[in-house]
Each structure stands twice: as structure tokens, then as C-alpha cells.
Image (tube, rainbow, N blue to C red; front, side):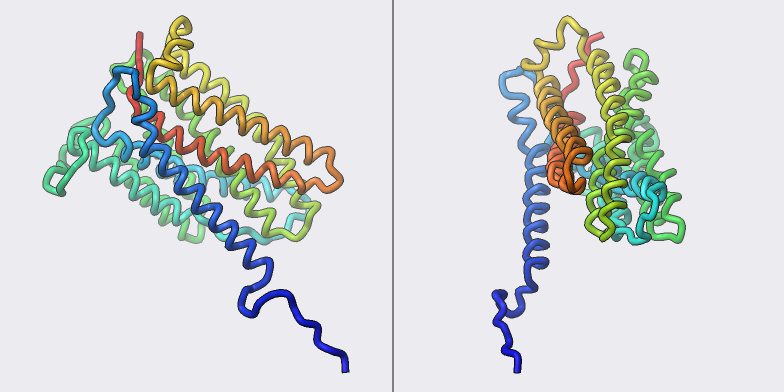
Length: 335
């Protein structure tokens, strides 16, 4: 009789796979907590010594906008990468479970919270009686807030339907509403600013959400050749997205801050400090993306590029949180 070899794993542990899964869960929870702290604690750090005053509840508003941006990234990234995967020869049919419905639910709650702030005159409501729902229809910001609430609700229904691809239309409505909200009619050339913001938000969502779904797909696929092909295809598109993001971000910055005052405002205003932090983080993301691309093209195993790509995804999550904070701090508009 062949003797039974003792295993090194304790009964019920589930082995290395389960331990790795727990490690990923802990890492995600830590990342989410860090992302929540940035908009909540960031305003006080950004405003210190600037002489500026923030609107009431700026931390909460920044957190809600962070959730809203993340809720855009997840489904748009899934739709984007799913289309890329169809172009990969011999790609497996398996796909990760969609998070679009959960993202739409989170976006709906965030949009509802932001609408309640608008309904109280951009103040934080302390009771339901302070919220004037009817007043939302009387202002431009109120109508845009309602549009975002309804669009996320519709996106969730589309994600649960037999044609999840239709959610692209309500998600596009959210992007348009955000672009219009960021540039009020009193601003000089508001449509130009809205156009820049629209392109910027779309590219950022495809980049961050696309990378997340690409990594999830690679974990699902056993075919290493198809996985490397998908990662390479995403990387080529990501280069274009980064270039467009850089261009639109630079032009938008110069619209907010005249060239002769940019360097000063980057350190003396809350908006400038937050923008500077975002630029540093995006530079780190670009370096990680370059590292992943070098590994993808030169390493014996192209999928070793997943390691820097995972780090890139983590830093991109922080960029999303900083972007939420950037929309909440005072904007130093100087025309």
C-alpha cells in the first residue's frame, strides 16, 4: 500500500489559492479606505495657508464625486475591453463577472447625495425637510443633478438586461452632465471647457476602468498567448488615451490658470496643490505603464507585465480619488 503523504496545509484553509484571494481582498479594502480618506482629509491639507475658504461639506462632496467617477470607470472599462477582446485571435469566451450593476448602484447613490446638496442651495442637508426637490427643476445645476441620478438608474437596468451594451447611452449622459456642470454658463467660452472636460473624463474612464477589467480578464483566461495579446492591445490604446489626457488636462489648466500665474498657483491655492498632486500621480502611472510595456515586449513571459500593471491600476484608483477632491476645492478662475 502506498503511504499517504501528509500535506503542509491545515484542513479548511483552502490552500494557496484561497490565501491569495484573501490577500487580494485585504489589498482592495486598504485601497478603498485610502481612496476614501483622500477626499475626506485632503481639503484641510490643500487649503492650509492659502487664505481660501471651502464650501460646507467639501470632504463629503469630494467623496461622492470620487464614487461617481469610479462608477463611470467600471462599466465603461468593461465595455471597452470586451470590444478589444473580440479582436484577439483565439480569445476564450470566458469573461469575468460584470461589476456594472453594482457600479451603477453606487453611482446612483452618489448622484442622489450630490443632488440633495444642490437642492439645499449647495449646503449639506441635516434633515429631509431641508431638501427642496422641486427646486432642482428651477436651476441648471439641479437639472444636471437629476439627469445624473436618472442616468445611473437607467444604466443599472441596462446592465441587468439582456443587452448590457445599451448602458453606454445613459453613461454618456452622465459624462455630458459632468462636463456641463464643471463649466457654468457665466464662464468664458463654457462650451469649449465642457468639450475638454468631456474628452478628459471619457479617456480617463477608459484608461482606469479598462486596465481594471483587462487584469480581471487575464486572471480568468488560461490561454497565456491570448492574455498577452489582449494586454498588448490595451497598452497600445492606452498610449493614445494618455496623450489625449495630457493634452486636454494641459489646456484645461491654462484656462483655469493663466500661464504667468501657473507656477505660483500650484503651491499657493488649494486647486493648484491638488492639481500638482494629481500630475505627480499621473507621472507615476505613466512610468508604471512604460515598465509594463517594456516587460510585455521584451520579457520571456509577456504576462510578467501584469505586476507593474497591477501597481498602475492601484495608483490610478488614487488618481480617481484626487480627481474627486479636485472638483470640490475652490477653483481659482481668473479671466
